[in-house]
Image (cartoon, rainbow, N blue to C red):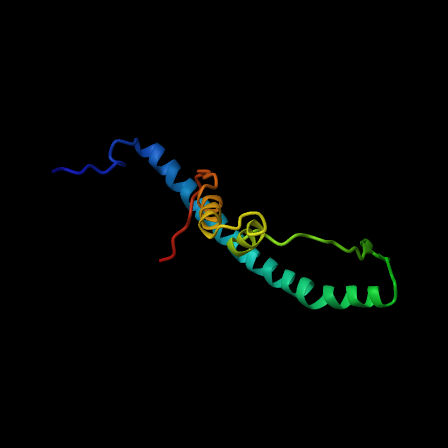
Amino acid sequence: MNIMNPFEKIPQTELQFFKEKVSRWVNVDQQISELEKQIRELKKVRNKELEPEITNFMQTYNVKDLNTENGRLRCQEYKTKKGLNKQNIRQNLSKFLTESSQLDEAVQSIISEREIVTKYKIKKLKN
């Protein structure tokens, strides 16, 4: 059995162009990773350390808006719903379905029959 190298049939100029693109992609990907790491650290400081203290102060002293050199900051209240999970679905369905086997079947159906979407993306594997 003779396994051919898929790159043997590709013209040298095309192959060189491809290698340059891959090399550039890897370089850009490394830069993005480094910058994302810095962004994560800065967001951690902003969201976990500074924002709770600022919003607490603004709530305590009833400050709605704050003027800064870079624009206004507003302390707003947001209400969001928790995400759905198996336990939450089961608990709420149990109000309508009293038979345990029907309840188990309904929960399993909801969890397993979610739509599957296929997408393609380049993933860098660690050495």
